[in-house]
Image (tube, rainbow, N blue to C red; front, side, top):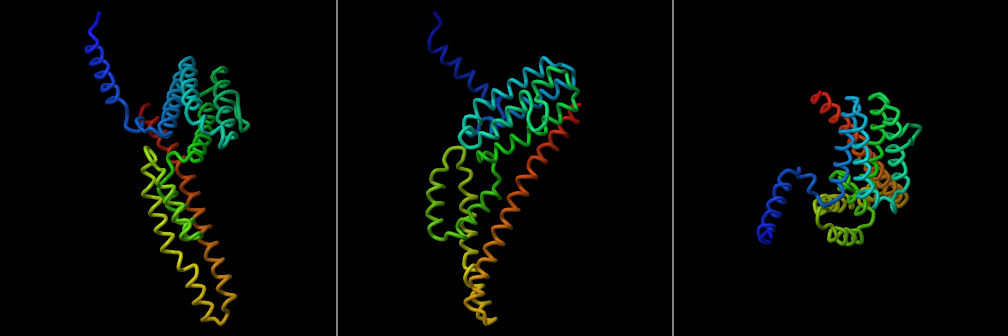
Length: 252
């Protein structure tokens, strides 16, 4: 019989060794690490196809799907089932008028065709990531919090206080951006009333100008914030795709 203390010691040493091997991003308890694992498996798939190793490519495809199915998909089913269907279609037999990876691998399709489906899959996965809030940029969080406070005032501050109290664990890093956005909203809020009031009095159009000016300022702020968030959302997948191309060129 092996001594129990020795088995326990060996197990703890093994866990420490494995923890040292994992990148820090994989240790995140949130869903961000699931998407990283999917991306890594898809990278392996592309490399295998480029080398003509379609059996290895199929194994990498199944790994990517398993990481998605038992991670993000469980949360997306109730939030955005359409995204789930799109991702599954691109991984299996087709979606968005494109052949799925399973069919392309079975047909031994060229690497260029696989790369096109991978690019569409990356966009769907990024949409899933944004929907779940995993990896949301600080700029987006600040903007959203500022809009809420700008339009709702003190009531929004209480709501945001309740939200930040629930940001625990891996999502605790979002507290600071939320508070920054709330502070910005409070700072801008007086202009929603004082500036239209001053302009309306100066032009002799009060109270008509006050109402119209407040609506125009609010609309301009919301529209500007929307385009800022869209810019961040669109640019991020492009940067990720560019980084993967650079890595692929460096490895080749």
